[in-house]
Length: 463
Image 1 (cartoon, helix red, strand yellow):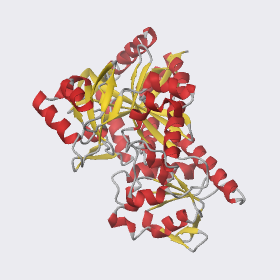
Image 2 (spheres, one colour):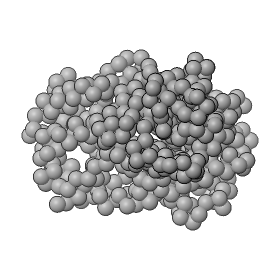
Image 3 (cartoon, helix red, strand yellow):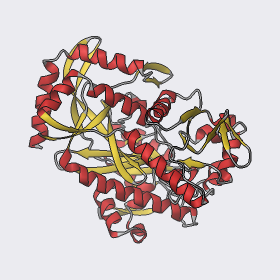
Image 4 (spheres, helix red, strand yellow):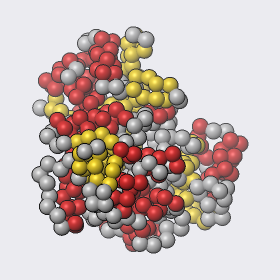
């Protein structure tokens, strides 16, 4: 921690002495030029950020990579077992179109390819707590890499690099390597020749709020020499063997949200690409079955000794170290919490400051109840709602929220360095740690959709 204290102190001096207002204006202008606009509550505004990356001691990187790899391995295992019929007592479940499409074998051997893990990381002791996993359709990689390059060109970062060793991760570099690896595996499974430069389609709904994030992926793939097109799910045609966008034959697809395919307003217009997927005639990433890892109850499986036998010693070690106590909210369930045996609903109600309630299939921080933010009566009402027969919720032990200082500029005035709650997001591409970005906010829901800011993560060392 002595190193990080010294590093942060040095950076504060750099920012304060370097006209933070002007540099923040440059940062925002360059991000706006990249169309980095965030729609929050129906209002479009500049993508929220701060004039400071998040610093992690390079000495922590190997452990972060190890824990990330073990968590992904565990998530992969749970998904495969579920698809094979293992009963997880309703904690993992699918129905309708997503269940039908999850039955499709993508040809290559893995479910989880591009994954984002939400984590509370405490730099003073290296403690990590994985809160939830974003497996089905994680986003933000394009915006991250665009933001990272803008940061790297700021005068304050140039000055920082004169004093310290800096390591950064461009997420789209390992994204592209993972796509090439899955394409190669797909070709091997189909027993067809592997192209040196396959043609990719990067896919999301043409009116998506994250369209420009996806367009950055298209741009960077092309810049790296790989022919790549953007496509709305309705843009594909399929002749029974090959997939096209216009006259361009597509070898592999990277999709954003699965909702862009299966929601009623899209379903009838994207059957060509889905039929190609069903026929195993397109390399499709992420596979639909990746969504088996999206449930907020995955940590309940990983923190319950009932399921220990499903995992290796290495995986279970990581789970014990990094996964907070979590359970599926069901009335009448008996449980144990730090040695105390109790009926689950009574336990939750009588210890409100110890728990958080999350919708099992939620996203963006919506529908979450934090016990120590509520009165007892409001908490009791939330527990009743979450435990109703028609609801599907997870309860998780409240985890101490990390804090870091960020320079704040408001209305053209530098307000100094202000404490923010932070949530680091580790990325895994094809099972391996790929890098991270960080969200910072005033409230306990550390999420950009809830008004937080996004910054790149720098792994730092002495020169």
